[in-house]
Length: 60
Image (cartoon, rainbow, N blue to C red; front, side, top):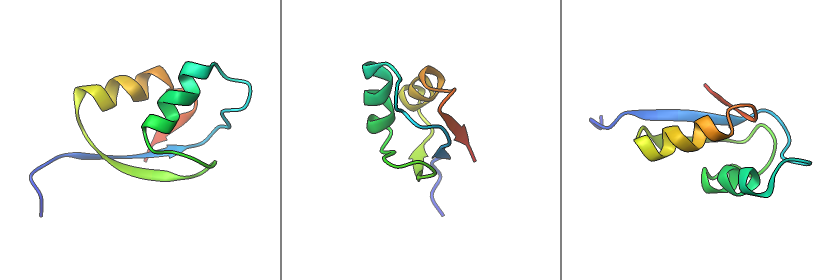
């Protein structure tokens, strides 16, 4: 098993009608469709992206 910490992020709200930079952040996290999930490395950059769009995503 890897020593790196990971986060599972799920897109729980549609990006339609949101700011363009928030949509770009969601795409940067690798999330496309509603209810899509990604396992990401737990870094400061990823945490910042999640904080920016916290109203759209959920950490599973």
